[in-house]
Amino acid sequence: MTTFDPSGPAEFDGIFGLPNDPDAAGVVLLPVPWEPTTSYRKGTAGGPKNIYQASLQVDLFDRENGRPYEAGIALLRDDDEIVRLNDEACALAQPIIDNGGAHDRPELVRALARVNELSDALNQRVDDIASRWLDMGKLVGLVGGDHSSPFGLMRAIARRRPGLGVLHFDAHADLRAAYEGFAHSHASIMYNVHEQLPDIATIVQVGVRDLSEEENDLSERSPRIRSFFDVDLAERAFAGEPFGKIASDIAAALPKEVYISFDIDGLEPALCPATGTPVPGGLSFREACAILRAVVASGRTIVGFDLNEVSGASEWDGIVGARILYKLIGAALRSRRSP
Image (cartoon, rainbow, N blue to C red; front, top):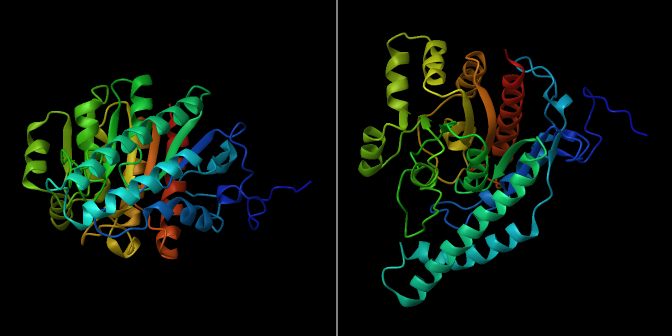
């Protein structure tokens, strides 16, 4: 029998080199290799595999969060139905993307309707899988895939925890009603949360630096959305304000229970150069971790999380993604132990 050595090389085939037993683990991760509506660069469907491979080199002791591995962390196997849905939707969506939308072309209009149906099916499939583990008392996280991937998980958690808030790390507001006709576009995830999940009380956005005028208008007029735009964070830092104070203000905008939706492009592009839609600016790795620390220090409880838009085409993106994932897990577990 292999003796587990947390300081040694990975000896098991689970994520982070841990034994892969979801029934025994306190943290269950759902991979969603999904990218039909990705509108610039493909590759996010390979994100879960890339993160898994990079995770085998992550040291398991964390100075911030202690020993998250002790709770047990298991990455589920790819779900065959999700893979099938992605394959069909990608084939139908690409001609629409290449054309900049369906534009009343009958064959593309039919394809668009089908992609929207498949996206609904994906959301239900994620909801169903997540619900099984949530009902067993697990902390459930999702590893995407493009940023439309976690809607089903957020819906499942919101049903069980009405009044929670979403802490949204992203370069983009994702508040478009649709993009290129796709109702569940990666550019629409927070619009859909805002419009379809009333049990989510607050959406706090951090690092946004690319958005349309309509998205900006929604952000300004909705009492449920609070945006800490990248330019505003930079102005505060340039004025000499400590980032610890900024992080505390972000945490203070959240309700007691928090779901974290982390698009990797919320970080500066040097940390995710192959992501689908990189944007100059963004958070450093240390700043992102400081915000997570502030959420925990404020006494809030992290009830779920997702990590999205990590490219499968770059080893470096996987290395950063695996470490962000471990920080998310560690912060969530530590928040549950806080007084």
